[in-house]
Length: 89
Image (tube, rainbow, N blue to C red; front, side, top):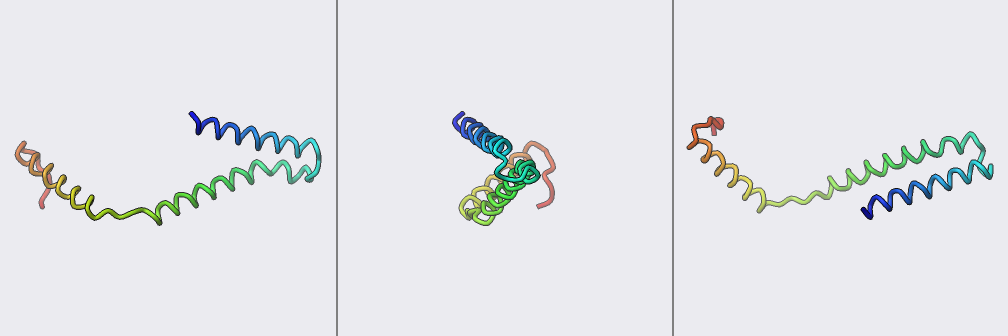
């Protein structure tokens, strides 16, 4: 719930700023109408940057890989005993 409140307050703040720029005519009107587009593009770039950074820093867990392989072998044995073909291994 707190995250939604943060997002909504940010949207309200940005909308207020944008409407203020439209009313005050500080920035030329042709540039002011493009601000929402710039905001969406910037938000997309930020999202891609965060995903890329997260992928680059993704931790490797060799212990978990061993446990996963053991679980897979256990599941294959279980299904072989039930008569299910689990592939050639």
